[in-house]
Image (cartoon, rainbow over all chains, first blue to last red; front, top):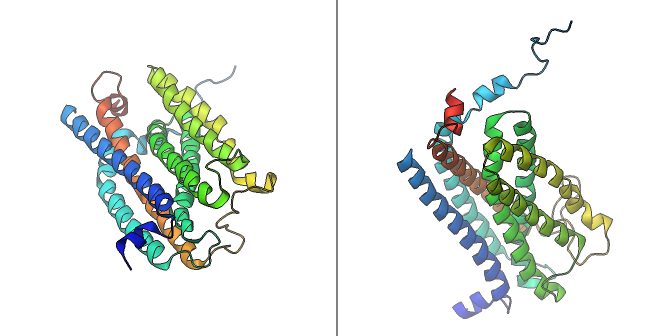
Amino acid sequence: MSWEAVFAIEGHGGYVWGSFGMCFALMAAEVTGLRRRLRRAERGA
Amino acid sequence: MMDTDAAPLLSLEPLDRVASPARFLPLAGRLVPWFAGAALLLTLVALSIGTTMGPAGAPAGDASRIVFIHVPAAWMSMLLFIAMAGCAALALAGVRLPALLMVALAPTGAMFTIVALWSGLLWGKPTWGAWWVWDARLTCELILFCLYLGFLALRSSIDDRRRADRFSAVLVLIGVLNLPILYLALSWWNPSPHQGVAASLTGSPKMARGMLGAILVMTAAFWMYANAVVLARVRCLVLEGRAGPGSISAEAAA
């Protein structure tokens, strides 16, 4: 089975990876922003 | 003449002392890495179950894998708003920490609502043939997103923290009325293109055990993630409050 077939998921790849990707991208953005904010707050405290 | 100095029947002062931001800060610092680790571990387990077991017999075929994200995100969007409503009730009663928790919960709740709406769009196109339909459940989820945004906008528009706490708590307590409608929308407005409930506490599950297992593990992962992020945000809010007079920490120390 090729990687192309794995990612295509019978033509639903765009939908499946789009929802998984958006979810984990938003989580990563939230964590990154929060870590930065926490570091700044700890320096300022 | 009435005795105005009489102690109230139910005092929240002991709870306020125990749950003061000053005491909560070190505890939150210790808990965050544990919650974050559990979230990472559970996400890996859920993803491995979801990708290896697959949607056996699901009518939508491989597009059904979207539910591994969509259902837990939708549950979390509702659960976090319920948690906000509980905090709002305590904040109106004068306890300080719940007001902070309410503020810390909102961005994460809004994020899960975006994920639920976005994955819902991507689920709708291959299964219903439309990105969006003005179905009761979808519309209530959109209203929930507007409530999260309204909460954040209201807080940022009021400078006085106590007034911001009061007004935003009232908004949350009114907004929580949307949740029973969101939950019961499928039985009130039938037929709906939206699939039935994934799992209920009373009935048997209507999907394959493997899929339901992956959904439940992913929900646990999201719950651990939310705990870690919310506690970290509370730490931020308390630390940032140290900057000026009348701050949260100064009040906590008083």
